[in-house]
Image 1 (cartoon, rainbow, N blue to C red):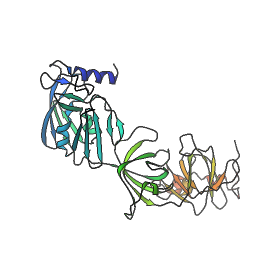
Image 2: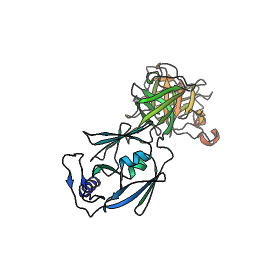
Image 3: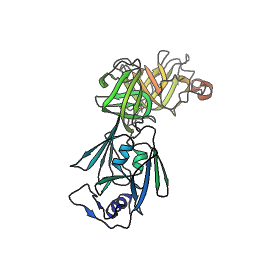
Image 4: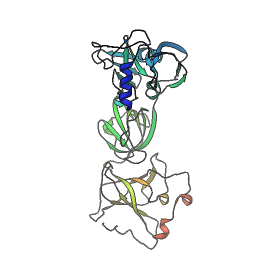
Length: 362
């Protein structure tokens, strides 16, 4: 029996921890499902040191079920009950989640999360699986026999990500392209946009190439790139206007006698602005950093790195086109290493080249 079939059967088989209960397994309060009274066991629950209403657990269930309203009140969350859809909406600060009865589809800051068990209504009380407290509200959960302890210092928690803007519109911001540290930040009604000095911005003020710090939900959709609701974006360094980006793996590195490098960037289909190949020349004015904005020695870049290059749009008509790099962001260089430790000395292999020659077309 698969996981969804098992949890659906558990909801239908639920016997009330309170005798002779009714379960609304599909959020339909007009058609309760009568169940037996022998399968569920009571579970005592303590939240931040205070006992709340009891929960229950079914023999075949992975997690105990805990009462939503009692949990919300213990954590200082505001609960709104939507009668027509039998959905509880919990709010505290920037945290918002919707709990639709009978669906393993928990809406967390406008993104859906599955927990493996569906919310149910027993004798007028909605219950959720215990992992709702840990995976959605990020509380600490401890289970000992028939006792559950939930502790949290603060329900309103967030994760922090740093990076460079590779795409932005009026509802979302992509940072770090589609590389190893990529992330899509989805705007919500209360999202703040600021400069480092506290000056307020609008999402439309964000530009490709801006260095940002983002505070976002700890819950992320498992897409590619992952997505999360964003609470606050701070621009720590503004990029110049009208930058173009290209990202991908490095197909070749060429070096002149004076140490200037050219990178042949091969972008894949997942890239924000896919181009088959482009050559970007690095000179003394090019800013070379990692996704945190920390300076990177160009000599440490290897063909194993994933890079995001920014240029002004002026390219040669050669194949591949060639342009000057304004900024190069390296997604996988350890800046704690010295240039001598991290570089593979590609310059010595190409020192015979006095100028950068166009890379041959495939």
